Image 1 (cartoon, helix red, strand yellow):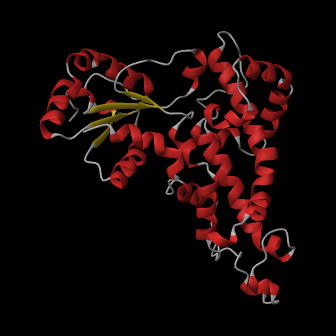
Image 2 (tube, one colour):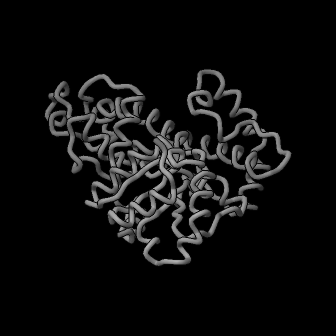
Image 3 (tube, helix red, strand yellow):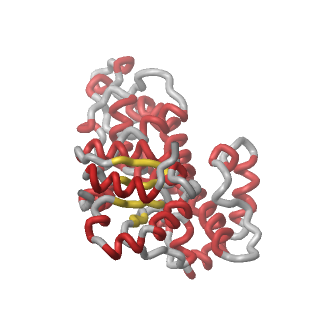
Amino acid sequence: MKHDLEEWITEAIMAETPVIIVEGHDDIQFYERLIIDMEKDAVVDAVENIEGYNEGSDGVIKCIQDLQPKFGKSDEVKKYILGIIDRDARFYRNEIPNYLGLLILEFYSFESHFITQNNLIELIQNLTYVSKRHVDVKTIGYIEDELYKKDFIDLYYISLEALRNACEVGYSGEVSYGEEAGKIYSEGYKTILLKKIYAKKNDLDEFANSKDITYGDLKKIARGKWILHVFSKYLNYKIKELKKACDSNEINKCNFCLTGVNHKCLWKVKGNFQHGHVSSMITNYVDESEIKYIKERIELLA
C-alpha cells in the first residue's frame, strides 16, 4: 500500500522518526546502510511508494516542492523530512532546485561515492592475502596508472558526449545517459563508439571548457553505474596481475617471493572471481571521507 504524503509526514512527526525520500529501488540500501552506521532512527523509501508521485529525481523534487508550504509553517517539519537526489545533468543545465528539505549529491549519482582509493585498498586485501600495510604508494601507482591514463579518459569523453546530448537542444549525440554500461562497453560496440567520440574530441573539449569541466570532474559527469562498471572491470583484471607484478618487482615485493617461495605469494588472488563479484564487493565498502557530507545532512534530522 502506498503512503499518503500528508498522513506519512504526520505519522513521522508523531513517532519522532524522520523519513528520507529517495529516487528509487537502487538507492534504498545505500542510505539505509548510512543510517544504520549512524545509529539513526529513520525510514528510507522510494518516492514511487508515495501516492501520486513517480520514481526518479523529478518525483522527489515534486514531492519536496509540494511540502514547501509545510516547511514554511513549522521548523519542526524540517527535522522529519529529507529528499535526496542525484546531481546528474541538471547542474549543467542550471536547473538545480533550491528547496528546503532537499539534498543534492555532489556527484552525478550515489554509485560514484564508491570509486575511491580507500575502497580500492579494501578490495585488494579481501581478494588477495596481503593486508593494507603492503599497499604502498608504489603499488597504488602500478594499479591505478592505466585506469587514469586510459580507461577513465575514455569514460570522460563518453560522459562529455552524453552530457552535451543532455544539455544542448537539438544535439544528436553518439551516446545518452539512458544507455546501460553493458551496452556501451560490449565487444565491438565500444570501439566503434569511441572512434566516433574521439573524432569530436576538440569540440568536446570546447564544450567542457564552456561548462568549466575538467578531467578531475569525472565523478560529476559520469553516470554512477558507468564509472562503477569501468572501475570494477578494470580491477577484476588488474588485481589478477599483482602476483606477476610482485615477481617482476613492479610492486612492493612480499616476503615469500623475496625468499624464493613464489607459490606462496601474498599478492596471489584467493580464488576465481569475475567482474560482477568485484562490483558487488566495492559497493559493500563505505569511504567515510566520501560520504561525510551526506551523513552531516542526515544528522540534522530529529
